[in-house]
Amino acid sequence: MKQLIGLALMMLLLISATKNPNNVPELHPTIEGTWELVSRYNYDGENVTDTLTPEKGYHQIKMFYNGKIMWTRYTPNKTVEWFGYGSYETTDNSLVEKLEYMSASMRKIANPDMVWRMELQLKNNTYTQISLDEDGGRIASENYRRID
Image 1 (cartoon, helix red, strand yellow):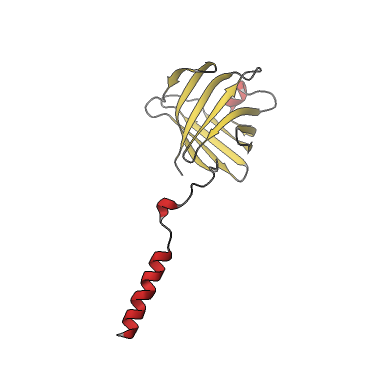
Image 2: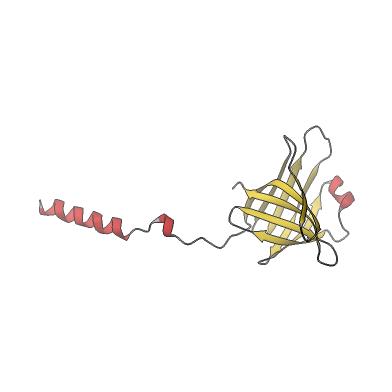
């Protein structure tokens, strides 16, 4: 009987010592993971002027791991391929992607140094990358949700 009471007290102590998951502080968000495009915004330099959502069957996925990025886009009923691979760096409010190789269709529109500098808005399960003009005005954004 004493062993049973001792065991019950030990279980109560262990249960009371465990943390309630609702009280766990939110971790600093990270861009590492797999993301899917959910929408795009157009800007007038500062404010959103238009929201575009992908057509049915369209998928654009980005993967960020250990300083490397890989992305791909699938557009139904089109034969043009879109993909790229390279490295990335982030700060609290910026994302810089430097592609090492990409599809021929992407190379046609890529800048010569293959570097893209963007404003970054990052939360735990969403992120937005905003393209800026030479004066720092917002042009357009891609808005992603975490899928892994």
